Image: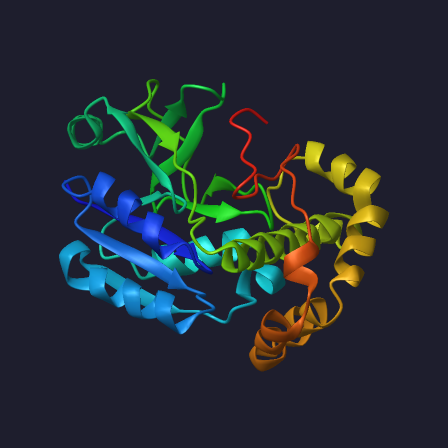
Length: 269
């Protein structure tokens, strides 16, 4: 039995090493979606490449903003060598292993396995057979059948916990929070603007997006050239803003329902 780990990021490559180390011996390759903004972060990522067998797939910095999360995950899964893939975010690690590989190998009739969390009462269905399932939805995406039925295993295969993301550089932490907000808000707004094209996003998020649409739009417009850069895909414009704008020194990011910011984590949302 072999599993591929898929993950992606705009930064936070220091804590990424903790995630990679946590799954060492569980997965035999990592497919990483490189949307990194800073050269030093990409240089650091490449120092991990051999130890963790990382297949680095470059993506436009605004890929998730424009295309949504499911598109990104399906792209990464398409480059995985194994049928079973496991999606984890940077800073997510194993808290307790219940026998991941043994359980998957002993239950070939199942095409989906989940893990849980000590704080959040939620089942994270993120380990799946990519030949039978794929991601759908621009945000809060879910896996849906390609062929056949959804056949989940009935117990968690591990317990997950979250680590804090990189906070040693306050400017970069603010940049990554702003990028997350841009991507989330733009995709929430798609639920209102183009509801027929958003796939399997749970219907509850449609009302959330509708109720908060105006405030999200206002927040994006306040970002000025950041927002413009993401809209048109101008990386140099974004980097000029990061270098010259006071936005990242004054902006405040507070975690709330639907989004967790680094430096302001809430364990229960």
